[in-house]
Amino acid sequence: MKFYNREAELEILNELDVQSQVSGRMTVITGRRRVGKTLLALKYGENKKFLYFFISKKSEKQLCGEFLTEIKDNFSFPVIGELNNFRDIFKLLLNIAEKEKMILIVDEFQEFYNINSSVYSDIQNLWDLHKKKCRMHLIFIGSVYSLMHKIFENNKEPLFGRADRNLYIKPFGPRTIKDIMTDCKAYTPLDLFVLYIVTGGIPRYLEILTDNGVFKKDSVFDFIVKKNSPFLFEGKNLLIEELGKGYGTYFSILELIATSKTSRREIESIIGKNIGGHLDRMENSYGIIKSIKPINAKKSGRTQKYMIKDNFLNFWFRFIQKNRSAVEIENFGYIKEIIERDFSTFSGMYLEKLFQEILMATGDYNKIGNYWEKGNLNEIDIVAVNDVHKKIFIAEVKLNPDKINIEALKRKSVKLVNSYKGYKTEFAGLSLEDFERYL
Image (cartoon, rainbow, N blue to C red; front, side):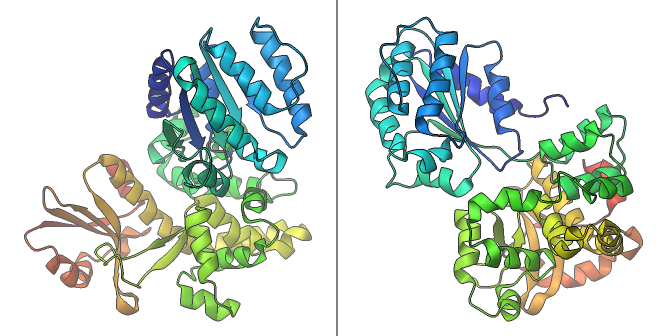
């Protein structure tokens, strides 16, 4: 699959590259696994002189031996003695960068926590000493959200405040998924919708499916739910390092959220214990879930729901993890039967999310979300507000357009509309048939 839709990120990296010709620049690239962080950095490094260091689960001495070989292959700079620690390797590179321009990409940077956590202090000390006189663009890439957040955004950590730019790489949006499918001559609105739900726009997942010519709904499910599928254990592989050995309760919570148990009260009634700490960590430390409030709710308001941010993880917890026993005995036909039975209900919320993402991309609104009143009354699928031009867009979203009732939507919106006095209100009914028009 060719390189898609990272023009804004490449522009930032190239701007920093120009700046690093005068003095050092540090960039941090984060995002969940498979989202294309490494590919972005390597694309930026094309036709430039760069070193790429991958921090694998090896001893520091082994890693430094590999790094030193890379340095000798790319730079004719005298190396005296053995360099068995990263501090000495980094110091050597900074000395080289005082003589010639370079890009240094360090991938899976958070792994130094397990290898030698003093590396972070060493880098801070050396960077502070050499930044102004070296010509290095230093790029750190990391996939473990909680650790990368701690390394660069915790004011007690040595590298706090050192990054010149933090890039958080997001999955592809609906427009890019459409571009990929169009290039493969496989685009239809329905098939895009299925890929959006299942892959969440994660480039690696889209690459796997497109490389195998899998686009249609049934073939997508057949590919994902089969023996040796790369997707069967993907959710666990993604989260196990983030959540640690005590992931059991977290997985139980995520499974419940994926099956529409979205309030803390509902989840605690099933799990049977207080989960406030778990929810807080998954939202603020791990970035796995997010809390949602009605669009005009007060920040201090207690009315809220939880959702899994990642489309793929939501699908995985709903259909694969929930049916783990069937996976273990390789009864994949049973899982596909469950998917076929429940997919239309499950996918309803994703049509809302899809249209919300499309509206966000227009730049026409400063607030986009859902609305409901106490007791889950008068639920509205999409509310988009522009406070400058004083307009509000209110929409009902249905897979079946025949079920859209604009008059009922207006009745549910009375309290909401009254809270936006003087705003021009537009009501709409949205279904998959409207996808092309808004995209």
